[in-house]
Length: 154
Image (cartoon, rainbow, N blue to C red; front, side):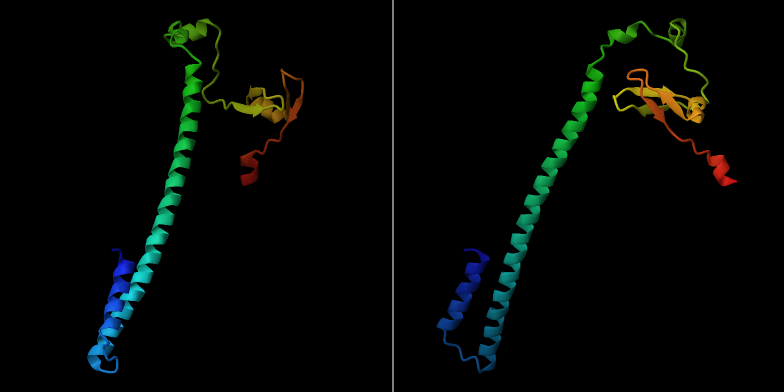
């Protein structure tokens, strides 16, 4: 028997006893049974709301798991494209310098811009100050403005 059924049963017992609700004892018992009915209805509402919230949280958890799987799968795929053998030839920085790789001055800032064709172009502050760059993939001229923060502060 659930709580709603028990409350209804008590109300039926009270009605079956034919208590005089004009006397103090009858008023007390009738008020208690009435209060139990109210508490039962509220408790039933709370249970329903709790179940609904729990179901929503389960759905949110499933969505977050799917997003996490998607993100982690993307990261894994990025690393899966390379074999460890690809990096065995370059055990130290001297090998890179011998191959003609120049990383430039550590204080130089390198910027990247993505062209409409999808090509990512890296450039330095000198190119940024020139105001434009030509995509070596499609020939599109990419223009940009350079706001010097030092001039803004003065």
